[in-house]
Image 1 (tube, rainbow, N blue to C red):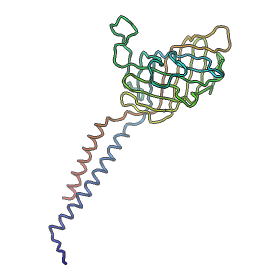
Image 2 (tube, helix red, strand yellow; image 1 turned 90 degrees about the horizontal axis):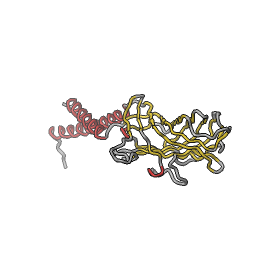
Image 3 (cartoon, rainbow, N blue to C red; image 1 turned 180 degrees about the horizontal axis):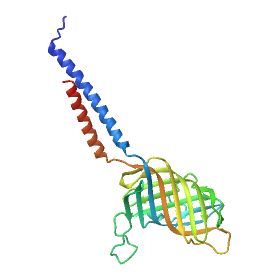
Image 4 (cartoon, rainbow, N blue to C red; image 1 turned 45 degrees about the vertical axis):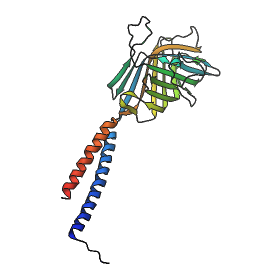
Length: 265
């Protein structure tokens, strides 16, 4: 049996080959461009600044513990507002530039504790393994504790955003004038507002409360109480919206197809 191949058949085969190459190149170019778009925002430091953070230090059996004033043992770590400290304001920055703020607003309700805005924010703290349980005053102590492998700090909002951290190590000092501590933490999970995202799972925290509640006339304490500010920091980016990525993919893919069609005449 003879098979006759005409010029038209050859042209059709060449056209099909060209279209296959166009589609492969276009999809590859589109995907590469989308990946570039997603990573194009250079990483910078995210700072989350929390105001009116009410914390306390106390004995926890053979160790000490830092927790929020609403903490009830053995609770915490479940994003429950009933077991967390409500915050006055939370500010998000990237590279020193303001991204957004969430502020507690008091409404016209006769009860001043009723919040009128739709978004509320809380912090849940339980750093349960701090040594020694009777903490020395007026001395900066390093590497004194951690959260024991579980949750240490949870920041969450009424509209579903959250940040969950495990505390790895903490350094602390308490004096009659200031209660200050810094900590390194491991990122457990994140869903931040403003399309912010930490790109490194190593996070740092600092907390400062002036004029803390302390026992008088002692060189150690088994209780510290304070209301202050906390900053949570780490490398991060603003992630593009999915719709933006899709539109960029379609535009760049179409551009690649037009270019190749011109090339193939």
